[in-house]
Amino acid sequence: MVDLIELFFFAYRNFVSDPDEVLQGFGFGRAHHRVLHFVNRHPGMRVTDLLDILRITKQSLGRVLRELIDQGFVDSRAGSSDRRQRLLFLTPKGEALAQQFVALQSQRIARALAECGPDSREMARRFLVAMIDPEDRSPIEKLIARADQAAEARTAPRTRPAG
Amino acid sequence: MVDLIELFFFAYRNFVSDPDEVLQGFGFGRAHHRVLHFVNRHPGMRVTDLLDILRITKQSLGRVLRELIDQGFVDSRAGSSDRRQRLLFLTPKGEALAQQFVALQSQRIARALAECGPDSREMARRFLVAMIDPEDRSPIEKLIARADQAAEARTAPRTRPAG
DNA sequence: CGAAAAAAGTCAACATGGCTGACATAAATG
DNA sequence: CATTTATGTCAGCCATGTTGACTTTTTTCG
Image (cartoon, rainbow over the protein chains, first blue to last red):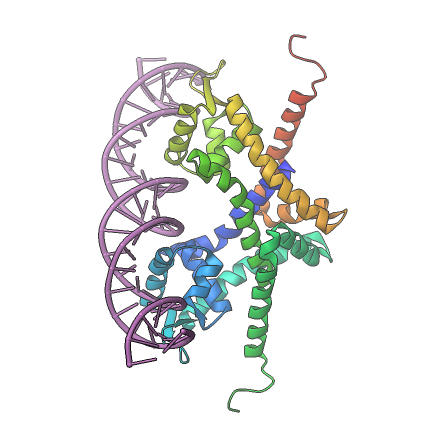
């Protein structure tokens, strides 16, 4: 097992190094990456939702979120039904950056899966899910499914809102 | 691919959280874990070797290494052939802690592989290797193989030194 | 209506673990 | 003997995590 422990360590280090290089050019760090990623995946999410996902404190999030808002990557709008809420969206500039990160990391994964053969995608998915704490799996899988569904609804809507 | 990006993130977070809890009890952090792990795997390694593996600076390593030495987890001896070198070893106390981390993380991996079926170990290994930068793979695989061989030689020696 | 709870933001202070650059010492090497 | 190598160390900086207290705005509920 020790080999897998170390491979997981080295693989993850490379995995995050791809975005790291891009982030440097903006003076951003990994915390900014995570915020951009999850806001991109869940447009209109509340600050509380983001805190739950990232499992960090309000202060830690507050710093990076303020920078991202000030520099025009994230937009924060008051909720219409509950005006205490601040709903988070990416600006076009933020979307472009988030998409760049997804592209980089997707390329690495796609290359790896291509090297591993036809069934490797499903195997990798099952392995990664199984590595997660059992009590965390269901919420995480639901989170991913919800984001996927919402993304699909945006790109291929059956009925458009108001036409 | 986005699902795998996120699963990798969540899986790794859980993966490092196991040792994190134990480390807290000693007032240590992840940096200490990494040092203990690799010194345990490569007893007698030089400081330079450790810097190459961890890819951090001398200062960053120096801080945690000094704490580990001061508190009796790591032993640093001058090399016999080259007395400039400081060869790093774990004390019995350090070995016990390092072994605890390996046990925790091995348990998680073993549980995951058991859930994934019989061939999953080799599949997971191939996937993780494929996620590593191609130019890093050979050195990393050699590093792991060397550590495995040395460990086997220590636990099941064909001929013991001097008897 | 009014009290309590919830969502968000903010401040001060602190810890960890990265980083740079410079410099010191001891020992090996040519 | 000069240079290089291995290590250690100092001072200081940055990113990102933490706690605890407090405010404002708004919703919810008795």
